[in-house]
Image (cartoon, rainbow, N blue to C red):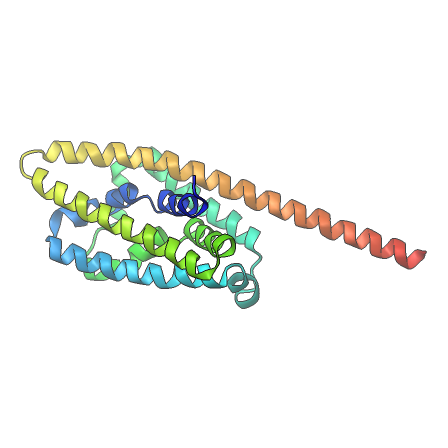
Length: 219
């Protein structure tokens, strides 16, 4: 698979518009297409600005600006993502009550942590490192546009089904929520594992340098 496409798919899988439709299930059903489109546009613009910055600046934004080593970000972010995944597996559609509210108030909540999170930031930074800043930003833009388009399409489907097939929609939320939980859990474990591997490799490298320095000093 093309490297650019592969990175875009990675970011798209982490964004997971089907899981996002479960988070927003109640909001998508209750409000008009115009209202939902406005909310999604604001959330996607916020996410695009942040993820685009990481695609351009990459790991430096964490290490230089925030003074946080990247593996620490991966490990903690993976733990947070794991908690979200477990809640969906155990509670199913009940988890979506966390995001009930007016669309005007939800743009920031949707942007973070569901669009802007450890996984999406990592994927955006990877895109910038592997393909260059402009291509990294293009990865972010394409993935967010696809995510927004899928959500609008699901909103259209929900509107067609909500009157005659309310039970079917509830079943969709239940199944999609639990499947999304398994996906989120798998990604979180991978993030934690990669973070730990990076931590250990850096620790071993640091220890090796220390030993060599001491040995050189003795010699």
